[in-house]
Amino acid sequence: MSEGIEAPARPFWQRMERERNQRGWSKLELYEKVREQLGGSFSRMTLDRLRTQKRQPAATTINAIAELLDIPLPEAHVLAGLIEANDVPTEPHGVSVESSGFAGPVPDVVYDPEIARLYEALPPERRELLERVREKTRTRLERQWLRAHQDLEEARQDFAELVRAEVERSQTDEK
Picture 1 (cartoon, rainbow, N blue to C red):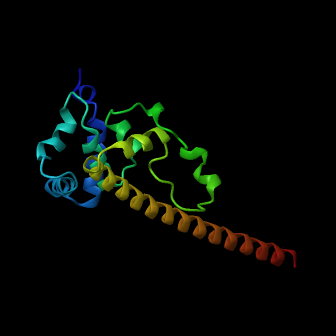
Picture 2: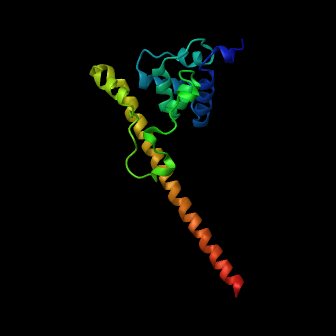
Picture 3: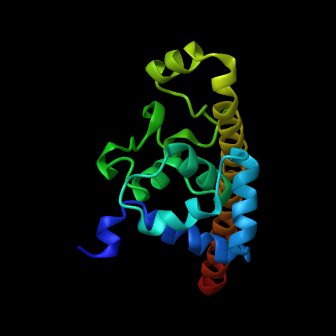
């Protein structure tokens, strides 16, 4: 078997490296940022092992790296081999981004009642890391939500200007 097939997280490692390079971070800088999120038990070898390790990586490692690099968690989990692509819900809450009109607050990352129940049942010390991941995800999503809303408004204004210009040209052509 080839190395890529044997290492289920290799696609995630490739995406991680691409994102790291785009940010201009060294491997050491990425390691230090991930270690800051996960704490002292995280080793530098963990990042390199994503490329070659034959077993699935820990979800907490993938979550921390994904949050740091703004990789959506469902995509990160698929790339890391933690879940199959067809297991990813396409529209949480049954509402598409297109139909939402960007109205209202960003939905919480915990939208499954069963997950919410399990999360609430955890002792506080176990929820601490999860809560940090949840808050970082929410902050990242709010930034993306706001950028998308701003892009939508700019696109609407640009299109309105194009329509007005075409109306003006057509009126000039008629004269």
